[in-house]
Image (cartoon, rainbow, N blue to C red; front, top):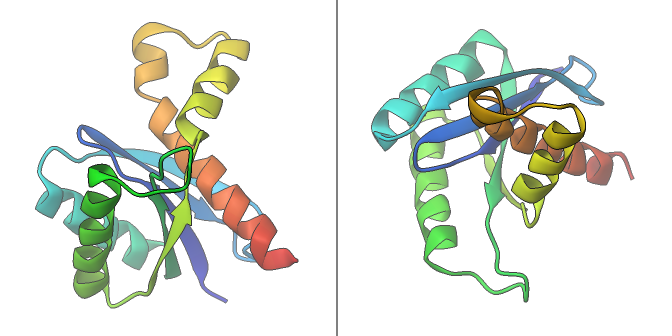
Length: 138
């Protein structure tokens, strides 16, 4: 069985979460730099190969009313390039409120400042992946 990778794409950093072998829970997380999208795609492709990933789940930032704006278009384009680079299907997944939720989780765990900045994207990616895994299990 191949793993599933959840991705929270951002301008500066991209959070990554990879499922366990049974695709039932998040097994590991990482944060990669993404100021240069081509470099982020190369890093994600490498992580996918190293972890035997068979599906990519990319967070899609929708507006609270469900519409899509400029950021969603950017993510869709990133997803297309990621699919071309990896040959792995990319599922776009609604990520509304994941970053807010990630900040809340880190606040409760007393993560602040630089510690939070370096972790919040990985937590958001974990929330995206957890949501997708719950959906799949139904």
